[in-house]
Length: 348
Image (cartoon, rainbow, N blue to C red):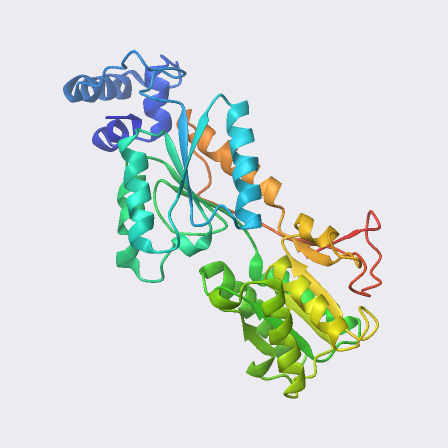
């Protein structure tokens, strides 16, 4: 039994229950008595582990991650854990893979451990099939749930994400302004986020009437997710007549593979081929020519997820979805020649 159960039984908001528990003056006497009667009827008594607002809490947030070795997710884990620690919450990580059954098992394990909140890391955890999201929706009724860079409507679900579609669309716009007419798009996932990135690329291609077909969209399967494999894949595409003049990727690792491929083909970056990564990870700084990349504002997103969950647990109502714009960090692999506010970044 927790604040969400009391809120549901009493037919009032979580914030109202919180005010009653804290003896706030901003609650009518009639409402106060109604909520107190529900609390008494439910037998809701804070136990010895109760802290903060007098709620039953273990001061622990559960993180559900498909793969902690992914650079983007690994960085997110670090950012979230650090931020929650500043609010005196511990973090409990469960890595599940991308299968929905494993995801549900991970969520169930966290519920059994009585975590105060749950964060699902990545849009791959949200299915296009509504029936496969029932575990998330059911769990959120008793444990507030946030989704990092994914979205699912729900009364107690909070989504904080980047505008991936707008990011790839505007990145392609910049390449077109640079004079590129044959962009190649490399991606590895068909998650909700992955599909938005792909759609953003297609929107830009259509908007600029570029003569590139689906052969200029290359999906990198699980068996090819290595820099040498991506390099070979791009060289092969070029040798089969897919002559591109720029590359946009859905993550930085693919951009490094593209950089190696272009050099193997005897072409120059960025004079002959511009290359743009995604996520602005430390990988961008590991190449001789540092890579330009789309920065998805991950620290800001993580900070807002933490602030959202902490506020909800304190009884404050928060927006159910927050979307942030990405920006481009331009380095040596592009020639945008755009005047930035700080000389380095271009908001998209």
